[in-house]
Length: 435
Image (tube, rainbow, N blue to C red; front, side, top):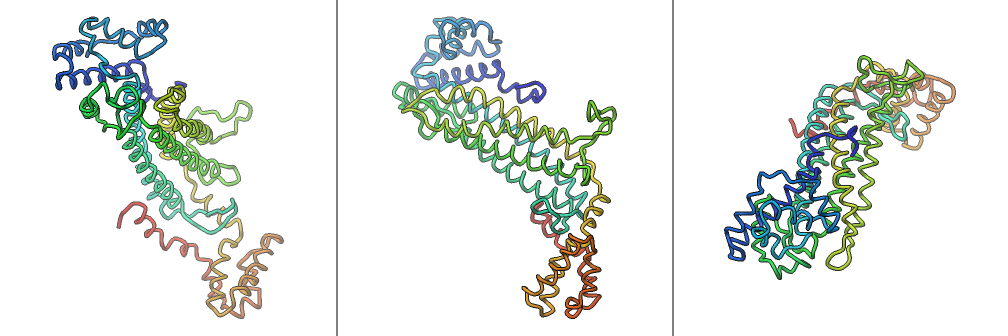
């Protein structure tokens, strides 16, 4: 996790201090549950809570782990040093390391999901604002990167809003799926710990008990979580790519805010580059790189192995921290994006009327010309515009076959740009659930 691409709140979730605090909560609540059902003395459970406000010594835990080669045992040993070995003898009763590790990891992922959902909410708010601001700002739609037909900048923002709204739903689903805990002991049979302990601990920590665990929580849940992060990252890149295109010199329909004192190039003083959008493209690749390892973690040997562990110790913090940063950065880019409506109109007109070819085609068919012949009539005039730098409207008006089917007024009518925005309100109502 590079500080350059990190935000403190998300980083804090993955800190050793936060991890050990969660471990303690799991162990302490488990002791309470076991005391409630008479498995351990109540005074022993109460004694564990003496460490509630204690700041765990990370260096000491690392020192113990260097000898034990086991992180959970190192933590438990340090805990015994704090509360006393006699008081600590019932801690971790009937539990296994994965009960602590897996439950903790899921708590961290849930907390990370909450931050990511808040980031999506902020992005959605800005996308909606910009969509309404440019609801009727005409720009050319493109297919295969070639001018197609007119659309609006508002619709561009609206479709990004709809995509991110779907991602918000996915994040809520992923959060719900990952919010499970397991305190089921070795190989998950509850042989040495009562299932009521799991129920109690999960309730205290805001989780639901895993339906059935082995010695680990099933990793299909985690795979779904990281796949969701990968989808969100791809949507970020989708938006970033559109911004990169719009900022091309020969397009210049919009560009990132270029702040006072900012420099675009060490060699060329004139440069204003889409550096933030390019950065977002790279960050999206990093988040997606976790997807395949997360999917491969689903397959574990028998009731448990730790082939997934090293993967998750990396991708847990790295993907959530990176995606959190990317969401905030994209929100700022969209909020400050400079839009150039005049350039958008100029770009529409660059094709000298070609973008109205379908309207003319449909008008001819409505006038009684077969679709095949109408297509030929329109295309032969369109090709003159491409090849001979002609004007599409002028060529149509000079085409005897076209003018036999249509009047001059009917031809001119097909070049009304407002025609293409007549259903914008309908689309906005669908996207934003408004009237």
